[in-house]
Amino acid sequence: MSWQGVPAVELHEVTRYHGARDTGVAALAGVSLSCPPGTWTAVMGPSGSGKSTLLHCAAGLDRVTSGRVLLAGRDITAAPDSVLTALRRRTVGFVFQSFNLIASLTAEQNVAFPSKLAGVRVSRSDVRQSLAGVGLADRARHKPRELSGGQQQRVAIARAMISRPAVLFADEPTGALDSHSAKVVLELLRTMVRTAGQTIVMVTHDPAVAASADTVVFLADGRIVDRVGSPTVHEVAERLAKLEG
Image (tube, rainbow, N blue to C red; front, top):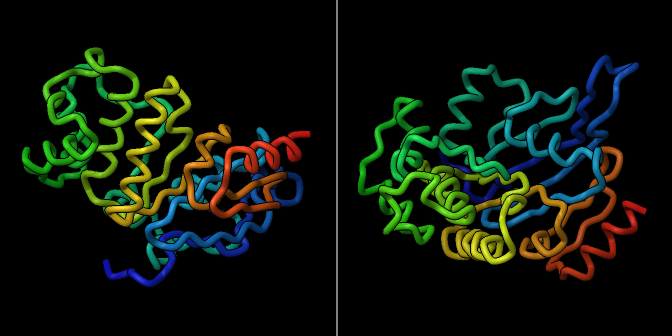
């Protein structure tokens, strides 16, 4: 897909209602957001502000009520499920707080599994290279129970990146990790942005995690109410505290 020069993720006046529009709840209320290629955007806000809904709509996991969503320059707003499924397999990677690794499979088997499920053949060398990229070349044959939480999350990142997606969506990727493991994962994500031109959109509640991003977007009541470029932990914590207060 040729999309360089256009935003990796675009939302234009997106609304998302849960329930009927006239009586339901607006999880998103006119959100517009643009994430250029090779950037890292963190999304923050109080509980119920619409963070996860924004992530799901941007990734094509959830349908918008109105507005437009574009991924790597392609309008996915009204795309049929078959197209969305194929697009997600090629264009999008996902990393969640729960690692979602299969306990009976080794690290390399977990990395290869989604591609095999999609009917896409990946070579062992590609899998090994993906694991090496997250510092786990020597853990390829280890099963999840033999890995630390931080190592399991890095396997999940390798799995998400094996298809070289245009955008990596991360939902609380360090939420289940200790501080050292979280730091390792964040450094890995920063390296991916800096050296591989990866685009990351991440939801987090932790100011220290958000401060690793290039830009922090703040949501409240389904609307973008603030944003900070080149954030510091203090800036992020202060603005989040105001919203929560």
